[in-house]
Image 1: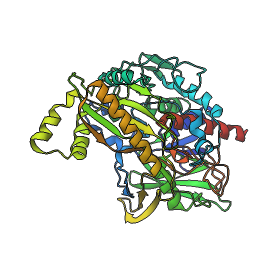
Image 2 (image 1 turned 30 degrees about the vertical axis):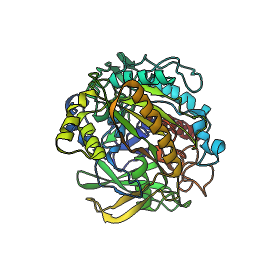
Image 3 (image 1 turned 180 degrees about the horizontal axis):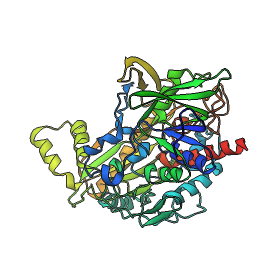
Image 4 (image 1 turned 90 degrees about the vertical axis):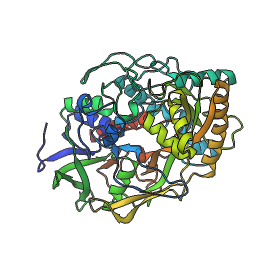
Length: 513
């Protein structure tokens, strides 16, 4: 339902990814007048997505972001997306839960930050999100607390890379399991959304799913929000948050079709992701009495180890992250805080060849030989915790973007803890591939999932928002995305972002009563 820009709506939601879409649906279901502003287009997967890596670059946030530090983070396809659905348009749909001790790393290790909410407050939302999305996974799951609900569907088939990782792990005594994936292993019905078809195992999760089997927000929570009366305004780039004399935000200014528009509102939910959420607050000088906006940037350790095999693997087939092990969640006798998971990885050819050319420095005939081995390659990677550090932060640069707004500059360097964790994982992954029969093994160092910049906490002196996502400074401003994570967690963030978004919405609605 379209609302007038002169009308005062109950809430404006900025961003429609894993943080914005579930929250939008929840607020709309409660009868609130809600408008979502999304910088990108509202795509139709069946007609706008193709099984073509280059064609899908339109789903990446490619506005220039400046990278600095000892380990500068690449942006674009690495971190965030654009379009209704946000980064979930091209996430791998890998949806492991955080474990309870992920939320108390400071308590357990004396470093980093604990979460201000316990695991048992997230657990029912994990259950709800998994059932709504139709997450496919094994029951029982081998690690973490016993689950109150099984996964909605049984696991997806394990592809070639997963089978090889499984073979190597068995020889080393490392337990493995089919991974939890938010992609349907069977046809699925969602109330308020309709029927979605099962995954065809085409392996294209990281660049848009044409069938709607992958549970990106555009085919799950967005239809549910529309069903309940929410309005979504695509291609609407937010530039200003206008406050009144009491310090509350009363208008959101955005640019649509080259024209500046305003939407009056009672509440704002900022869900634009780690970089854009912090940039918008810094641009508007809001919610930063703590000095923590833009601070505490974290990025998961995500080293990849690749190898060539005699087997015909076809790494483009099947869901990319098919197999998981959390035996390394808290490794014995480790010389670092936290832990990591292991996962098998499939890969599209352009992505693989571009990474390989950079990492191995191959040219000429050697590059040609390695490229021709593509159908015989398989990878394993880690997804590991990252500690916040004073030197890792986001600031506004003097350099302007195409909208004449300051570009964000992000400083990042892996600390000693991240380096030790990566070295620990490097040995294990090479041992797995050696046991599985790999040759020409090589490493691709990387960090994934930029996190932090608007930390949640119990004190207005040390955090940007409270445990409910509400700003300490601006009472009608809430933040719902991975910028609020106090710690990086040792799992992929998408499921936790969605669970936290529903909790934020419910806490907000309870307070309004």
